[in-house]
Amino acid sequence: MYSRPVPQTQTVPSVNQDFWPFCLAHLEQELPQQQFNTWIKTLQVVCGEAADGGPTLTLTAPNRFVMQWVRERYLRRIGELGEEFHGVPLQLDLQLPAPGAARTPVKPVANAAPAAGAALAETPGSASSPAVADSAPAQPRQAAPSAIIRSSSPEPLSGAELAYEKTRLNADFTFDTLVTGRANDLARAAAMQVAQNPGTSYNPLFVYGGVGLGKTHLVHAIGNAVFRQNPRAVVRYVHVEDYYADVVRAYQQKSFDAFKRYYRSLDMLIIDDIQFFNNKNRTQEEFFHAFNALTEAKKQIVITCDTYPKDIQGLEDRLISRFDWGLTVQIEPPELEMRVAILQKKAEALRVAVDDDVAFLIAKNLRSNVRELEGALNKVVAYARFHGRGISLEVAKDALKDLLNAHNRQLSIEHIQKTVADYYKIKIADMHSKKRTRVIARPRQVAMWLAKELTPMSLPAIGEAFGGRDHTTVLHACRTITELRLGDHQLNHDVHVLTQVLRG
Image 1 (tube, rainbow, N blue to C red):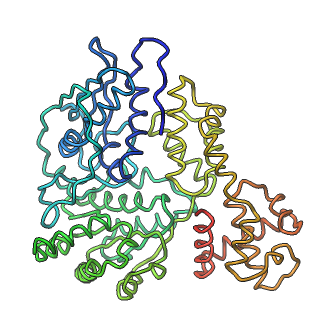
Image 2: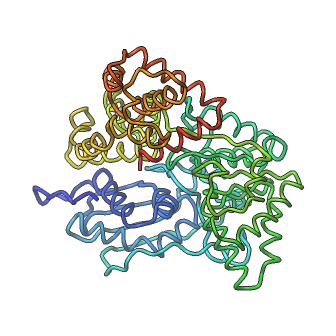
Image 3: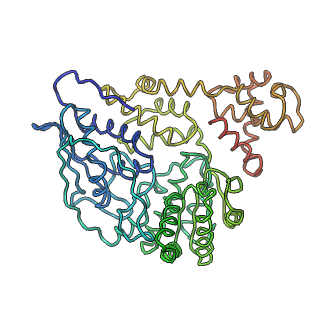
């Protein structure tokens, strides 16, 4: 969490450039990620200045639902942070975009900080889900009034806008904003095919991969593309926990008929993080029947998970077998070039200039997922603003000092060798030996591949750690594993499991 800089004079800091990153950093720590992305990151700063009566901040919400929800639950906390930052009450104005601003159902007004998580949820009492809308987000702690709060009266949404709100899709997550590379090109190709031919190509589409690799972005892109092509399509994105909450609510209110009618009326169901269905027997039962009804009606189902279907614990076999009806694709951790491209895309969205050497520094040291990369860039941008400096290589090193040191301490080649040896039940000494039998050589190649992907060490240094081998041997091992993973499911599974274990 960032600390408030100590003012050197009595001048009130610029609200637009200094306070809002400070506020975002605090709220991101205080709120669950999905709530932060859904409600806070959708706000746009349109005016931040120091008025005669103190600092003033004007925010716009993308629609009336978000405006009402933020006003009731989060605006007071923003005001409290404003007083903490400036030392005087912050005047807040929350409103909708000006009437002349572009408002379309698929691409609302751009955000100051683009959303990176779940789509917009609806206010309680909306008619887009069975029984009652999803349970309200947890509220931040109550604070004494510390802001003068004004808000504009909400304007009614058009029919198309209201229909889009009910999808709960994130308008920022499209195929155009998705950075593509070797790690996700197959998944993207499959997703585009599904978007062009929903219900007929790859049903269900099952996308799996580690945390923060872009699964949610990809499936939102499918939904957005389908809705753009056909605004009459009934598309719904739902996180597993929200689906579970709907089941519980239907059970409590004896409204299962309404629940079933709603979910079986969809043209496309996008369900995120299916692994959280584990051991929820009644929820699995209802999803099983909804799955059958939708697929029989040629309606598209898209599923995400953090692991391969057959490795999900606590999930019924009959569900797992149905996941095999369509296509299962994996999203892998991004390679170096893709990580740099992701950072440049994020910098463009933040409207900041980031040199290649800064992007390369972050990309070279942070390898696990997209979320970690974007978080590091946000930290560099905030650090530069707080200290009144431009974004340079030295600033990036200062901002990420603790993070880079911790990352470099996490993994050693010795640890990788031991983990792989234990997994394949061979001796650590075999990693250094000259034995070429398949049972020894293949795990050794896997360990070399992991060392290249998960550590910043050069190929010659890796080769030296594997019994003084030449760097060309390491390069050959890495290419071999990369090629074999495309057709050898067991090897691909082994590498995926080992990667997750080593990353903790």
